[in-house]
Length: 515
Image (cartoon, rainbow, N blue to C red; front, side, top):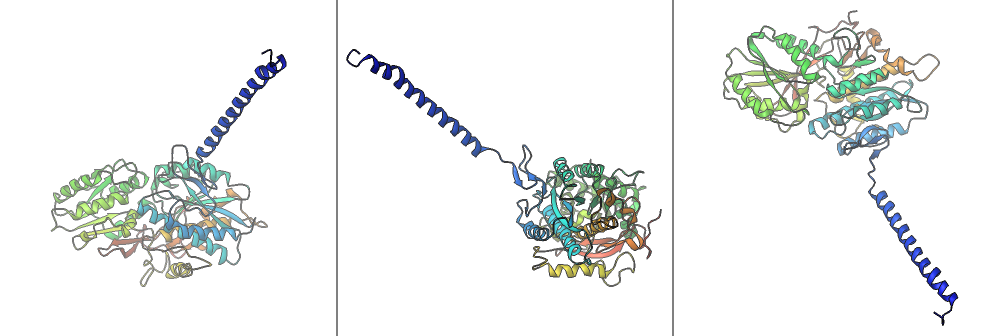
C-alpha cells in the first residue's frame, strides 16, 4: 500500500471499484426493467377487434358495433360487408343518419350464418335503393353492424355503444334486424327502446316481444314487419283447417319467447284435444344438438301409438330440434300412416339444411311452415290486395344489378328462406320512418320523432314490401300481414303452397287496421 500511495488506494479502493460495481448493477437493473416492460407490452392482451368492436373479458367473441368493413371472421359475409363500406364511404359528412343492423354475427352455426348473410344482404340492398333511387330524398342512410354475441349474451355492451352513437357525427336513428325472439334479445330491445332508440324487428315473431299484446306498450318505439306467432297460427289454421281431434302438440319446455308463444297459439287451436301434448327439453343454446334426438325417437314411438285419427303434429320448437324431430318421425315404425307437421317460420332454416333426411319427405310425411316471405308468393293468381308482384319484382331487379359494381357484388344470394326479403322490408320501413320524421326546414329528424311514425304507417302511408303490404297498428305491429305457407321438398329447397291471412282474408284496399 505504501508503494502505491494513499491517493491511489483511495481512488481505486474507495471510489472506482465500488463505483464500477454500482454502475454495473444499475445498468443490469435498467436492462431487466426494460425487458420486463418489453415482455409486458408484447404479451399485453389487446382485446380490440376493429373500430367499435372488442372482446369482453373471458370471451373470444368480438362484440359491439362495427363501423368499418369488418366481417367478424366470416368470409361469407365479406362481399356484403365490403359493399356496405363502399356505400358508407361515398356519403358526405352531415348528409346521413346511421341505422344499425343488429344480428348475432359471431354465431358459428351454419344455418344461423346463412340467415345472417341473407338478412345483411337484404338490409344493404334497401340502403343502396334508399340512397340512389328515391329522388334525392334525405337524409342518406349509413349502415353499421351491431353484434350482441352469438347468443346475445353481450347485449349490454352493444347497447352501450349504440347509445353513444345517437349524437355526434354518427346520428344513430334506428336499429333494425334484432335476430331471433330470445330472452336476451328481448332484454336488448327493452333497453334500446327505454333509451328512446327506435327498433324495427325483421324476423322476430314472439307475441311477448311486441307491443299491445297484454295491454300497454313495453317497448315504446318498436315496429315489426313480421306477424306475431298468434297471427301466424291463425293464418295456418285458416289454411290447414286444423282440427283438435286430429292434431297433437310437440313443444319445447321451458321454451324461449318464440317457442313459448307458438306453443300457446297452437294450444288455443286444439283447446279441446283429448290427446296429450309431448314436451322436449333442448340445450339452452338451441342451435346445439344436445340429446333431444333421443327424446324425439321416443316421441315418434308414442305418435305411432296414437289413434289413427291423428294425422297432424303441431311443432313448437327451433329449427335444430325441428330437423331432429323430422328425422326421427321419418324413421317411425308406422310408415303406413300419413302425418303432416305444421310449424312456425323456423322451418325456413331447413330449406338448405344438409343434416335433414330429405328422403323421409314424401307421400306419408309432409312438413309445412309459416314463412316470413317467399319469392313465389306473388305470382299468378295472388290476391289483389295485401301485396303485389310488382313490389317483389322491384327487389328482383335490384338483385340483378347486385352481381357487379356499383351495387355489388354481395356474394351468392338465396330467396327461398325469406330472410333477405324480410330484412329488405325492415330496412325500407326504417328509411320510411326516418324520412317521414324529418321536420320542415331540416334534413335530419330527432331521435324521438322517428319512433312516433309507426302508427301512421297505414293507408296511403303504408310500405309496399316485397313480402307484402306493411300496415302497422297503433302498437307498431303489422295488420293482417300476408303469411306464405311453404312446404319442404324431398329434392331440396321448398315449395310455395299458398298465402294465408291472420284475418282469414286479405286486407281491404285501404289497409286500415281497426282502431
